Length: 267
Image (cartoon, rainbow, N blue to C red; front, side):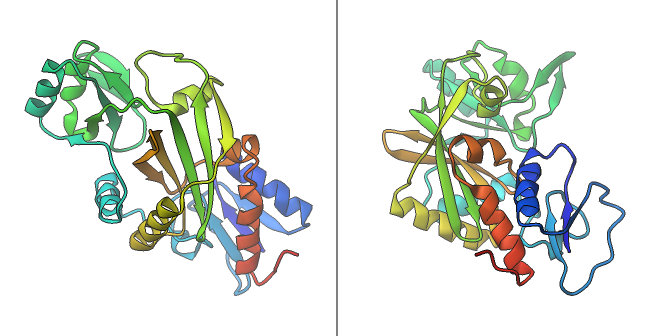
């Protein structure tokens, strides 16, 4: 039996389940992470939400890692990162030069209440005029990085050493200040293109996942003049939209891994 622990709202899981149904594989989907199913030796578990069964999942995760940890390890493995600012004095110097910066949350996107004003902490472009003083008050909760005007964004999916990648292009600048691609996707303001990435980048990604001791995740890059800037890894990232729009077929590879773990091999 295949046991899937995931929220009902997880669309990526829905797309994988379509393949399980195609192969007529029995499965159980559980969105109650406190009530766990009893297991037999030949059962396989796929976890899409942190719970007690996480260590038994067909994919290996490591949620003890912070974004700071991941950034440090990414740099150690040769990946290029945007310059990060940690002191208000540094930020003010940048603004004096009339340069822009990016503010993004160290944790998940939430609503911040600062000076009785509600701010959704999407990745946001600031220029010394646009509410930057409000974000600086919560500097410890956010990354403040140099602004790089990207040619396009790149999403890389890592599934047990196999790599799938697609470029994400913005159709228009729908919001002048929000620089978060998730905002653009939610507003259907992007298009996708399957993309092969250079061998040197593949090797760095392979080393990174080995160093992190995980074997599943989605990586965000921005690309400027053939330079690939690492932004973050999401170990539970959504892939359904990218896979279908760019014809990556990630879902079938995930099903292959799930069934191989249960000693069933796809033909």
